[in-house]
Length: 54
Image 1: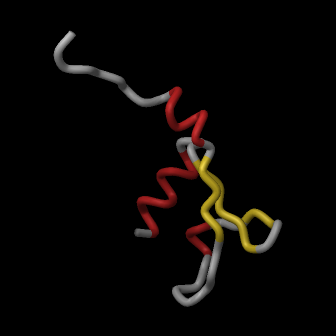
Image 2: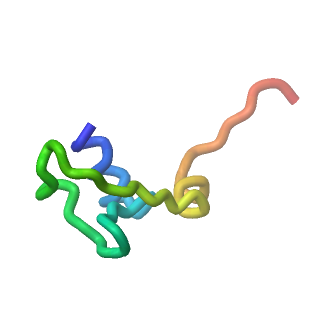
């Protein structure tokens, strides 16, 4: 899970915070709580889109 979150942060799709402060997900202890804040606009702008049918 830590690697997946790190990838989201590195790609600019999300940031990790403790309170209002940004934190490095790699340095969080296993038991520490954090907030994953998604940048949905960035996420959708940088994903491939395809459709089937019409």
